[in-house]
Length: 556
Image (tube, rainbow, N blue to C red; front, side, top):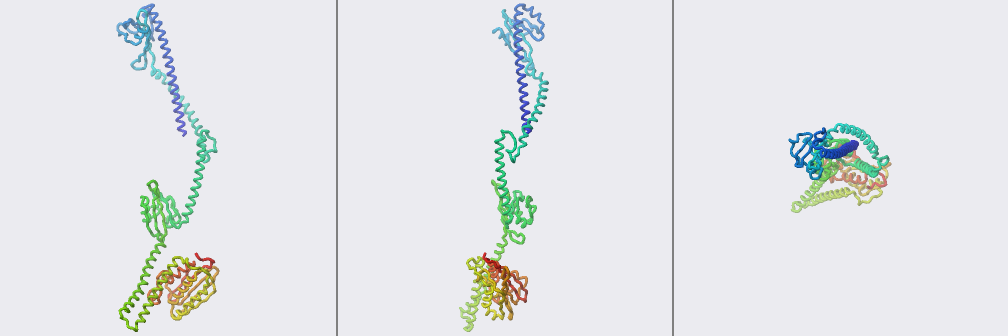
C-alpha cells in the first residue's frame, strides 16, 4: 500500500508540475504574442505615415535588421522591399494581409516556416494613394519556445521531482503508519483515521463473529476427537491426494501406522486391498470389502466426499465383522450338524418302519423294532427341544422370571433327579457345600446343573463318582461339578462348549446326547453373567466350575 500511495503522490506531483509549466508557457506565449502584434501594428502605422510624407526616400534611408518593410502597389506589384530586389519579387495581390488592407485599410496574417520552428507576422496598411505598406517580423513558434526552455524546464522538473519524491515518501509513511499500527484482533482499541471508523466497526464485528466461530469449531473439533477416539470402529479422513487428515486410535491400531496425520496413506500402509479401495474412492467410486486385520475380519468402506461434482476427500471406515463372520460360519455348521443329527434317526426310523410295513419282521421281533423306532424318535425330540432351548437363550430369555434361588438346594434337587441314571451307570452322586442364594432364572440354573451332571455321568466309568460342590465367597457363588471320567484332551478343551462339537464321536454316539448340552450351559451362564472354568486331563476326570456374581440384580 505504501508503494501505491508513494507512486500516486509522485504521479500527481508530476502531472501538476507539467500542467503548471505548460500553463505558464502558454500564458507567456500568448502575452508576448499579443505584445508583438501590438508593436507590429504601431510600427506599421508609423511607417505608413512616413511613406506618405517622404515616399521612397524614407524607405531607402531605413536601416532595419529585425523588421522587413515592403511597399506594394494597388495592383499587387512590389514597389520596394528592404530585404529583396523588388523587380524579382512576385505579385503580392493575393496575400491575405494585402487583400485585407486594400479592402479594410488594415490587415494581418501569420505564416510558418518550412521547419515549423518560426513564423512570420505580417501587418499591412493602405495609404491614401491606394498603395500598401507591409511590415513583417520573425516570431518563434511554441515548439521553438519549448525547445529553447528545455534545459531549464528539465532542471526544474528534476528538482521538483526530487522534492516531490522526498515529500511523497514521508507523507506515504505517515499515511500508512496508522494503518500498520492497527490491532486487527481489537480494531477499535487504537487511534486511527475517523474515516475508517465504519470499516473498523465492521472489522470488530467480524472479529467477534470469527472468535465465536473459532470457539464453536474448537468445541466441535474436541467433540469429534472425543467421539472418534472412543470409537471401536476405525475412521480415517483423507484428502483427494491420499494425505491423512485425521485418524482415530482404532484405525491406527488396526492399520499399524500410529498417528500418521499429514502423511500419505500409500506410503504408510502397504495393504494392497486398502490401496485399491482408496484409489477407487479418489476416482469417485465407492468401494467395500472385507479383509483380515489383526486376527479378525473387518469390513472396510471407502467413500468419496463430493463437492460440486468433484472429489474433495475420502472417508475410510473399518468395522469389526469378526463376530458376524464367525456367526455365519457357526450358522452353516449348525445347519449342517442339525441336518446330520436329524437325518441319522430319521433313516433308522424309516428303515425300521419300512421293514414293519412290508411284514418282513417276525412277530417276536416287533417289540424290539418298535422300541428302536421309539428310541430314535425320542432322540429327535430331545434334539429339537435343545435347539428350541438354544434359540430362546440366543434371544435373551426376556420372558423368563427372575427370583432368589438357593444353589445348594437346586444342586440337591438335581442329584435326586439323576439318582436312577447314576445308579444304572454305576456312578456315585454327591452334593456338598454351603447354602448360597443368587438372583436368577430357576429353569436355566436347573438346566446348567442338569447338563453338567448328565455329562459327568455319561462320560464317567463304572464305579466312578460325580461331586457337586457349592461354595459361598464374598462377592460370588461357585458351583463345581467334578467327575472321575475319561477326561478331555487339552486340544479339545477350548471347543467343547461349541454347538455339536464332540471330542470322541464314536463314544458320544454310544452314550447318546445331542451335542448341545455344554453350549446350552454356556448360554445360560452368560445370561446370568457367570464365568465357566474347565480343567481336565485324559483318564483323570473333569472339573467344571460356574462362577456366579452375587449382586442383588444380575439381570441384564
